[in-house]
Length: 558
Image (tube, rainbow, N blue to C red; front, side, top):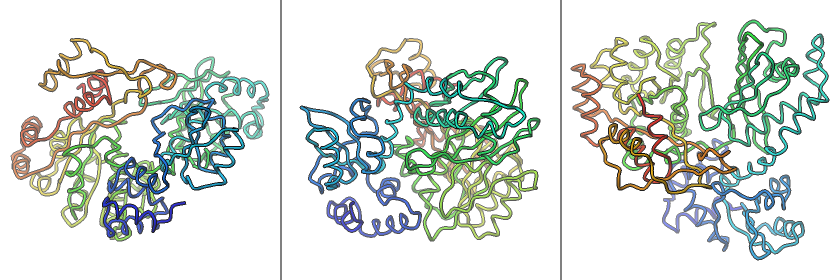
């Protein structure tokens, strides 16, 4: 494997990074126990593509990017999944009877010889980054889609449910296999949530993929008690409690990685419903660029998160990616010399060296109470999961005034809407004007599937709606969509990206806040000063072939 000193030589001699920046990234990587390459990319010091090309050049091989490439299953299966994991290799194409092999370490002779013997083909090595390997290895699990129903049906046939000994039934191998298969399928499909909904005559399995729920399977209702009990056992919840909601967590291993599942159990008329939020533990945090923050917005955020005090607010409806954006900013700030404290409800991601506190209203630990305690914990940076009431808002603002950088979220539709929301809570205008640095409003749009993207002509009605919202005539622009294929489940979309508007609070906006100006006045001034609105950022991503007109209209509707 590439030694840090070798990587340092490669990057510094190419002029991509200074020795000082490299040393700081290496110190952070060691401290957080994260791959050095992940830190370099996440900090924006070098793009993953440029990093891959430079390292490939060192190994004297070509660089391959596989995470957006759909690899045929017949090619993947030439190298068994366990061998691919062990050697950190992925076969991705066959050309003239030669197998093209992505490798984290193209100098690994043992891996090359194994693949040569296993496939009886000549091997052409390519370099792939560790992050690319981690994303691509999940393609092995695509085969579960074809065998999912047969595995479930086979194990349902073997299941023997005894309601008087439900704990024993929950520990039977068929029940364990059914739950493991559902979880593996959810991970393979990129689901953010797995729903187990008890209906009158069946148990419905649904996945939330790219923000939308999809029906996956319908199971016999008899399996429901054992599956619920199995999840309760894993989550350390009360098996015999069926009348009140319960929340818990457990971990599930996929490949060498752990998925943390946040479990919510809710009693309903026909039985207990379960929603499991999937949170990958070992995945590298997304950089601001990967989230979709581009152009002038990027240096604006970097400038403001380096300020020693003030407030950074992220706004948007539930499910718009606010927490993910906050965690990306926190990870940029997470250095040994910075003390970061958070108060959250719930804690979604566990981050090394960040002091994270879970709200517990039953024990009296509210956002406001937790925030007061955090102030005595000598923080440099504080993150509040959400500002919901006047008391929390006032403590957050006073914290920002007294030398802390405060990050939080609000439920408003636009960046400018956050200001009247604070004023309505009773916060003094002059205090608000003195503390807020930037406000980020965001939405998530689905990305066009790269496997079936093609050029289209959108309807005149759609273009007219977009013109009304943006004031821009798009008749001469190019438009794209996904035709629908097996890789996107015929939906035309795969993955999501953010669209953003970022309002920097300047002198004029401070004056407008003090005058209690309307949301529209603040928004109009910000646009004149160069702020890119949500719709305009969406249009930029339409023009780049990232998303569609329909998606931008859907998420920016009032």
